[in-house]
Length: 242
Image (cartoon, rainbow, N blue to C red; front, side, top):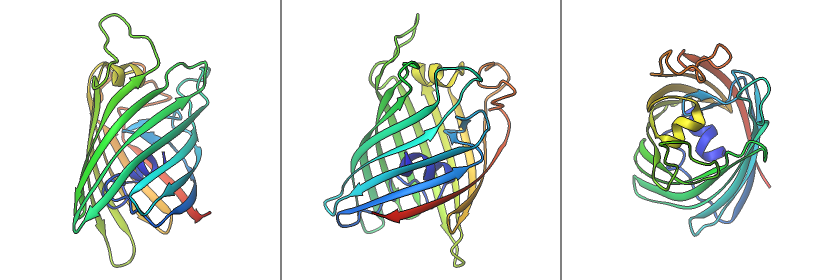
């Protein structure tokens, strides 16, 4: 999704969940292109390019809702071709403190059978923010010893943003993903940490990201994914009012 994934991935000033600025009854759109769609430190396109976009509504009450889509690919021949997200929540701020709570549903090709939803909460202070996403529901059946129930997978992220006088924004990101569903969806064998540094200005962004994954995660670290290596991402995004 645009505010939760693209901007957090690009690490603009802090976590976008907590820095969501609620405008009075506004409807906006966004379009972006990137050489690699990175989500929580892992490529979602086998290190190939992605075209993405979405529509967002924000009310002066603090309520917001939106939808976002991107192409995805996890293997040369698989059931995945797109990701379509739908989300809603409530955000606000008081002085230097900001907050955001909501629900996000990840929808993939029908044949993939791996749709899932998360509830999230974020709190920010100044340029620092912390966000916790918790598994709420999952479509696939559980395998032996697996638990895809509510709260059985989480993603905790810490973000810090630095705004320069030139208009350049520098973002620092650290995340931790764990749980049976996280391992099943990502093709990893254990919890992992991801990290990143991003420089962004005027719609352009350059990101360096990595994980602490090792060679034991055969699916996640095939040559086409290479998720145990440092990745470099360049993107351009445009926002517009509707």
